[in-house]
Structure formats: C-alpha cells, structure tokens
Length: 429
Image (tube, rainbow, N blue to C red):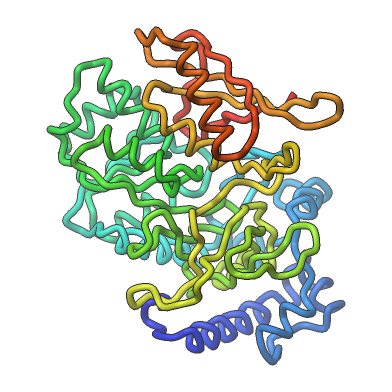
C-alpha cells in the first residue's frame, strides 16, 4: 500500500497506527535492544494512538546503536529474529563516526524494494526503461535496493561498478540507457569527463537522472547544472539511509522538495535542542520510525538530517504526505552558526553551483578567537583567468545572501578531489 492509495490524512494515520501495532507486537519479546525500552515505557501492540507513542517512546540515537554493536559484536542486539533468518548485510557510510552494520531478513528487504518501486514510478520509470547504475557496489544499502527494485519492476538493469567514468559513459551510450542513477556530484563529474573526451551527451537517450546520496538533487543551482550538462534529461531526487531504507522522493508537483513515503514511515520533525516538534516552515531534525523493517527496526530514530516541512499542510496532486521544502538541508552536525547566522551546507552548495566557472570546491571550518569561520577553496575551470574577479563576485554573493564576509581562495585546476560516492567537501580544522 502506498500513500497515494490511502486518499486522506486520516487514512494515512490509521494505516500508520495499524503498522505500528504490528511492529510492536513483533518486537516483543524477541528484540533484545528494544524490549527493555518498550517495557519501561509501558508500550506494546495495544497502544491506543500515535500521540501515546510519541508521548511515551524515547528517541533512538545513533550513538546508542553504535555502542550496542561495540558491546555485542558484530551486529548488536537490534535483531528481532534468530540470526539464521537474516540474508543481507550492509553498513553505513560512517560520515560522522564508526560505521554501523545492518542486517535484513528477506521480508524486510522486500519491504524496502516496494518503497524503491514507488520512487521509480514517481520518476516515471517503468519496465520499458534501461536503468544504468553508475556507482561502485560497495557495502552501502541504497545501490543494492535500487538495483533489485529495478529488476522487479521489469526494467533492464545495468550495473557499472568498477568501471572508469569513460567506460560508464560508453556503457550509457551503448546500452541506450534511459535512466541514470548516481549521486548529484557524480552526474556532474560524468558531464565533465564527457566534455574532456568530446562526448556529446545530447546524443544520449538518458531522459531521467535519479540522484541520491547527498542533498544536491533538491538544490536549484545543482539541478540546473546537471540538466544543463545533460540536455535530454531531468533530475529526480531521492533520499534514504542504510539504517532506515529508502525514505522519500521528489514531489512531482513541487520540484526541489521531497515527499516522505508515509505508508512505510512514521515521520516527525523536532527541534534538535529542545526535542519538541517544530512548527511547519521551521527547520528541524527528521525523526523516523520504520514501520515495516521488522527484522532490524528503528523507533523514533534521530536521523541527523535537517529538514523543513512545507508551511502549508495540503494534498499534493492526489498524494498526501509530509513534504520537505528544499529537500535535505544538511546535517544537524554540519549546520554552522557564524556571527549569529545559521549557515546550511545546502545553501553554500546553492551559491557555489550558481557559478559555472567553478568545477569543484572545499569548505574549511575553523575557529578564530573561539568563533567559527569558514574558508572556501574553489577550483576554477581550466583556462579561466580572471581569478580575482571570480573571488570578488563570490564574496559579494555571500555578503548579499547571508550578510557575511567569506574568505574565498582559488586553487589550481585538478587539485581538489573528485567524488563518485557522497562528496566530502566540508572539513573541520
């Protein structure tokens, strides 16, 4: 069942309550991680409504999961069934610490594939498509669920792990792929390589680029850059996490926003400091309960993702769901307070991608007289000469948008790293 099938906000909440009760009944008493927490909170499958769950159930934090796996290696105790039931292993990317290992049963795996099928359908992909996966198939969840869901959809699915960028471009052309799956950064990188190799992307058959792994797909300047480089294609954004699964996809009626698949998740947005719900339109941390991942569930999990609920609660083109305006704004840990101004990584990304002269960048966060500051290294396109003017224009843009003076440093072409997976452009001194 999808949110589209439910038809109203009341039906969505009734469905979520039914799924939550089923989840709680399944967890008790087999899941050693959650059973003591649920018993202390006085929660089981007889819970009366979602409000009771929100009032009684404490948040799950990543540090508790990491510590649980440290104390109970290698998989921790957040397993509802005996180990023999599990057939899939993946791990987080460890962008903010130690990677977590995550196991799935065949049933939990299929639950995630159904969500990915929703992503494909919303993007207009079908069995008639050839879907090309331009990334290395490592231990991260998203690539594997995306690939398996595409095959179940009936689409011709081409894995391109272990290939060079040139070989991937050749594969896209040879197979006449109509859908490309990659990170936003790598879609731009492929376009750069195509230009260097005199490959005409306008002659390709790619009509949709589904991006994930980083916030760029909902950032207007990033979307525009990708679509300008791939003239036959449009960008479609998606986001998920290894520990929760595929969570949201671009709202077809609100480009640049994400709609959470509420048939599969129970979402909340909280103030990361007060832990109270935020008002629509205010930025907060996304909290998720996975309603169908019974084998390795998460209840009220603080994802660390900064989001902003669309200020108007409404039906979106027949789809009821929580709409995240601007997609994922960044990470709670990445938001920086500079001289009284909240600076989101996505906002910095928007500014830098609005300059076509810049091919790559890196942001350095440092402290000056105990106060945080940022310094941005930008790599101009090969052959670009007026570096002083570029720095001045960029500084003026930051001053106009944030009322901040930002240090801009230009570096030699080719000196900054290129990324196939999640781009790691922010460094803390």
